[in-house]
Image (cartoon, rainbow, N blue to C red; front, side):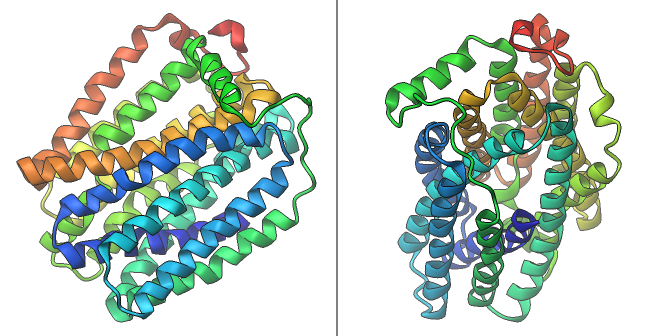
Length: 388
């Protein structure tokens, strides 16, 4: 519940920052560059934060990293109140916040399998993703309302207020020290985690298909420009909310997800569906059709996200889970940032719609090749490392 409330606030900032950057620069290129700026700290602190989560009390690490996120939001609020409109300051705050987010998210992901039995992990992930996506529906819609009627400062201020709920949730966690002593905070621990993934084709390919989906087919950096084509106003809120709307609807009807045995095949098919739906959304010139197709993409994304997270949490031993979640966070949040950069540059070179549609089609085509892997095709619910 704490994370879901915080996600509602986070979505306000996630919409306000790119809209503010677009208002300053009038360029989708600079909006896309937001993803590139946050990528390096996201990768570094995602990998290192996962290693830390395997060596220290995970509750304490969540508290420290979440507090840094909250302070960055406060700084965004201050720059908006002072009307600085400084592009460099915005980019810098995005970079710091990305690093803190990487550490906190890596740690949260490693907490779940310590609190629940293995058989409940898929249902827990579905519930978590659905609750967060529900917040991701109302957050952008609320952001569109706040930005159209009030100001950037109002959006950042509301985010800062809501984020205090996740700090309270972290305080209520029990102490979660490592089950096995001996984990380190250095580079060697990070390398061991990457080596574990490199020798398991199932994990490697599950990360690969997600990278393809997010880098090639994520259209969010194009939403401010697209919203202007659709007439402005609340259009930007609907575009940012559309993917989450589909994810929520899929989550509410997701009882079947835990009963699927061929989880590897289901993962690939869901990502192919994501790419095709995104491409379709880029072809339309009507807001309602774009929102509907993005919602279909969001439903496919929810399915693929549950399978990716479940495979990762049940495949890796507990002493590796922090590092696995670190890589997971790098991929699932770093991928969209690369996708923002890709979309922004492509739009600057080829135009809005070719950048949008082309990415979705290329994603669907490339991800299909993952089914050529016998390890991924055979992977089923409850399979262990021997399946890889």
